[in-house]
Length: 288
Image (cartoon, rainbow, N blue to C red):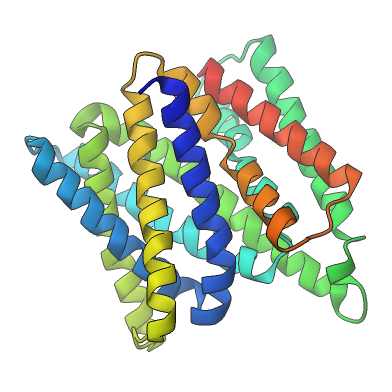
């Protein structure tokens, strides 16, 4: 399978899993939902390690970074599911997808000197973020008493998820070259699962879910795990940059699903913001 198809599978899988998180997060709770999704992903990652015959590499630094990555993924996904459960998807998903601008900003602070393409991409993402923030106030969901407060909470949750995504990227960049992509995924899934279990225990949340929701959440977990596995496959393909660019468009897929199935109103300004963020994100991913 070529790089473009790996990237498309990753984008579609992650986008669909995130869209499903809107429903399961509302019904079960964001933390418990992601714990179950992560359980499925951990099983898939473990099976991939077993059947690939991968040799486990020990590195204190690599394992530490992979563990940080796993915890960061858990924080990002719990906040993302919470944000999507609150809605609207067309505001939450693009804010989370704007994470590359912060990754590049950190790299600049560490001495990287971006070229014209990176600056243009950052400008596009920043412009999209401004448009999304400006459009939130006029969204029908935030009309009426208390709407402004709810809007701020939703944006803050989405922004927190975005920052957690930055930690994911940076820790992945540190861990993968040391212990390998698949081992990084495997360690991070177990670390995230343990972290979420601790959070649930502290919250006093019983891991009890209605039987009617188990098939839905299991499918969500399969899609989430498939999204990460296909991303790794694309990262090791003949043209990994193409896979990375296409995979980075997962938030657009989530928004499109919300438009199709939820009939969520998306203004021309929001479409422009989504396009701006997607193009900027794809440009940064491809150039990197």
